[in-house]
Length: 406
Figure 1 (cartoon, one colour):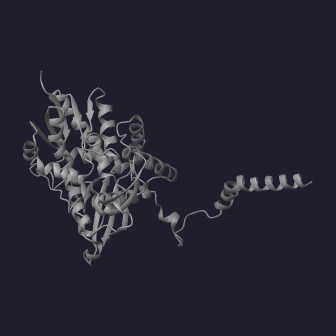
Figure 2 (figure 1 turned 45 degrees about the vertical axis):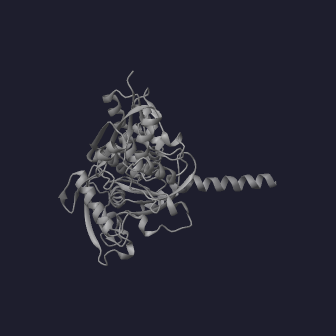
Figure 3 (figure 1 turned 60 degrees about the vertical axis):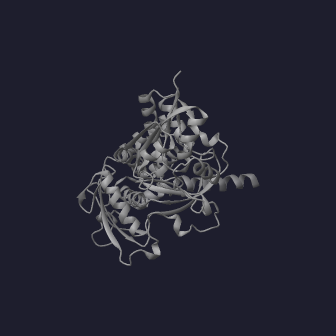
């Protein structure tokens, strides 16, 4: 009888490194690792060799950066999806792509199950498992962190040391870090105390705004149909553009976020994020939409942005509602073409200029100079009709009160 085959979503970090050994022993299984390169810098180095040393019989590493940005991050950007108003969701956006990768490797290897290294109270377990269930309903899913005997990261480290598993996490540096091109999520350690300010060593790529350059930096981002396509007049592919914006933003201290957020399972968590490129692009995209979208579409899209963000965060990327809402989003982006000029300075972003052939801004209507073409007299009738329902309500209530008194 052949051994059970399990495909592990492998990052090379503490949890997934321990998982490979633990799963192989617990299930007497052959472990195949699958790693998606979404732009993470540190742990991707030597990941195949590390997986082999840990006990994997086969390892896959896929460069998914282009797909991640063009098919996932761009959708979130066009939607204006910021979870609870500020988080660009780098981790949440990457999970459905990694779930798809897991399913594809499992099908190719004729595997019995897939496994992930998500905790039993985190968001990612939901994102991975709902994604896998949707794409491959009959595939078994194993979540070791909900099953094994370890009660802390320190116990995992002890296990790793005892089994000669190569890891980078230490008891003196307990941060859990998830990184991709769109941003970095940092949690654990002192960050679990919401009363404590994040220590400087928690931040991985951004300059402390206090120590950022004393001279501001100006950049111009060009968009076509809601998608960023150029930087300072130079056309760039998605990976190059985001990589460059990440460097520029980080150097100027842009993109640091310290958030208390509502997790999918209902508890609150505190995490620190660094997302220079995502923060810059969301700012620029929003400014361009304000210039181009008509009032009612712009207002309604704010509600859709919030709902799309919730769906992404909650792991429902492959749901029918997400697909339907993205059809609306795409329709709003047809004219979102133009350029936004920004000034970056010590962690701040300032809009300097906005331009588009689809701009709905009409200077002759907006100006208060002699060039004004707005018909001020028309406002008299407009206001009377606009306020008529509320005037009527007050009149009716006043009359009704008089009738009661009588």
